Image (cartoon, helix red, strand yellow):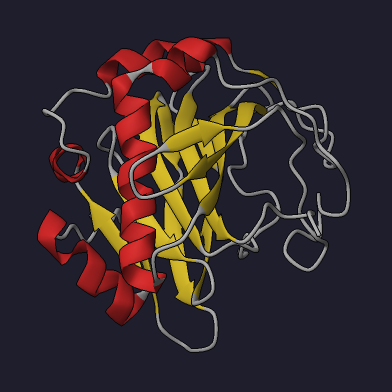
Length: 245
């Protein structure tokens, strides 16, 4: 029997102090909505858009367990601008498995980008990042993920425990369906401390200071024939997107 640990939820008002103190914070779905100035349940209309993600053709382990969409934005304190579609790139330093190559994914659908919930979420997180590290423009990459058990097992982080090469990483659980596993693990990048918990509540938000912690999610397995785990991952980087001069 594997123990399941509950996420260490904090109140919305504690988000900025917690990020300064520990570099990691977790909000419940209601607190996430509060952060964005939205009513509880405001994100639920986005859930069906995870049913039309496209296969990730770049998995070097030969798997077919990951589907995704990807788009990029520049966010200020009060505005959000989508930039022309561009590839996702990471250095080998941060992603030894899939780094060093341009990866083109299908873009996030326009109806998602135009939604009030999406706009307020990305802007609220930009404001939080600026509150922690100073007011500036943030270069945002948005990744919709579905990890499924079509191969018998699905790997949310096939590269293992890692940093993403950005300033902040936000992970939102969208849905879990028919799976076990998928435990989140967060460790100090330069120390012994760590914590483990399982995100089960839709629209739970985990925010990480990518310069201070490393993270991973354990593999998922089906409870019966098939299951999946949907997430939204948002990375915030000051100065430029990865791979730009």
